[in-house]
Amino acid sequence: MKRWIPFLKSPPTVAVVRMSGMISAGGRGSLNDEKIGPVLERAFRRGKPDAVALVVNSPGGSPVQSSLIGARVRRLAEEREIPVFAFVEDVAASGGYWLAASADEIWIDHSSVIGSIGVISAGFGLDEFIDKHGVSRRVHTAGKSKSMLDPFQPEKTADVKRLKILLEQIHESFIAHVKERRDGKLSEDTDLFTGDIWAGENAINVGLADGIGHLVPKMKERFGDKVAFRVYGPKRGLLQRFGTQVVSDALSGIEERAEYARFGL
Image (cartoon, rainbow, N blue to C red; front, side, top):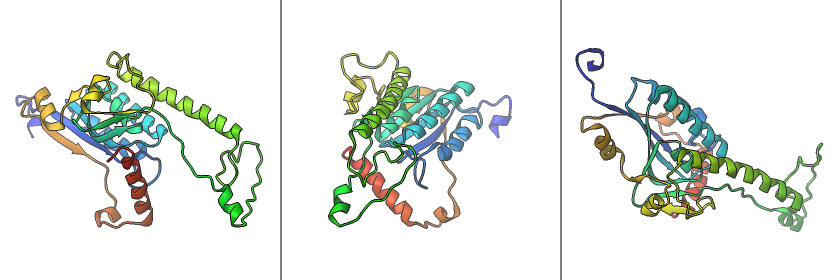
């Protein structure tokens, strides 16, 4: 009510958006632009907040979805002229760091793991397995590269070469994003783009984060003790409200657990 009474000043407001989980175009529990986009729109547009805080806890995932979400954050921040702060919990690695770097400032915990500025492609080779079991693979294509990296065929040198070119292109985009967003803050004595990771003070020393700080105390320090927090999140469907799980969610959970385990979490 105070907001609509001209002579009463409302306390500062910080909109809080949680960005947690693997970044992927598919999967009900995944983090992607389709799901988090509307949440960000509400957070930036409702009542003109004094700041938007992104609570990031992600081991990464799709580079395209990371880019889409990051671009949306920057567009809304510039259109609405609202500062953005990222607060990293356990990890902001790979695509997770892409999201954190979309903020104006990055604050972490003493044990937060961040970085992994690189691109990875992984799979399995099953050609020897099916050959051993007497299984023949029959593939017919129009276009010589249509069956590139078929896991049921022996790996081809030309396919690997093409894949590495694609990975390098994506890596360059990632590097450009970090350099733009962390301009003037990155260490010139350390190669930050090898896919390596840093934790706590070491991450701050190389310029990947601005300092140690948690959401509530840092925002109170910045905007005063009376700052109000508005938490925004995706709307849950009917099945989610009743706790119903499906097999695809279980498989996504296993994959996500494996990604966090890469960083010792």
